[in-house]
Structures are given as structure tokens and as C-alpha cells.
Image (cartoon, rainbow, N blue to C red; front, side):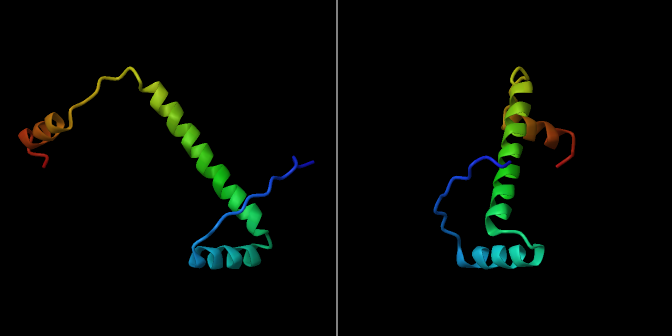
Amino acid sequence: MKAAMKRATVYFDPKIHRALRIKAAATDRSLSDIVNEAVRVALTEDAEDLKAFDSRANEPNLVFEEVLQDLKNRGQI
């Protein structure tokens, strides 16, 4: 059984809203289902990014200008 759903008011750009309505009709899904899935995917990606950041926390920081100069010195740019 699905957990109790919470209601929220969300304002979409008219073109995005139209695209969502068309997708909902074409896939026989509700607009809410499509938006929930998109938000779930975005949050999952954020969690994966945070995990990657944590795993790389002890790596040395590189100075952009030094990396750029090294690439120039090696003729790569």
C-alpha cells in the first residue's frame, strides 16, 4: 500500500505543463506520478553526487590555473 500522499501547489511554466499533460496522456499515467518520479530521480542523483564527494574528500585540491598551465606546457591546449 502506498504511503499517504501529501498535497503541494506547484507552478509550472506553461510549456512544461503542456508537455507534462501530453506525456501523462500518452503514457496513461497521472501528472503527479510523472512529477514524483522526476523528483525521485533528481534526489537519487543528488545522493549519489554527495556520496562521490564524500569518497573524494581526502583527495588533494588542484589549482585551476596550475592545471591550465600544465596542459599548455604539454601542448594539450
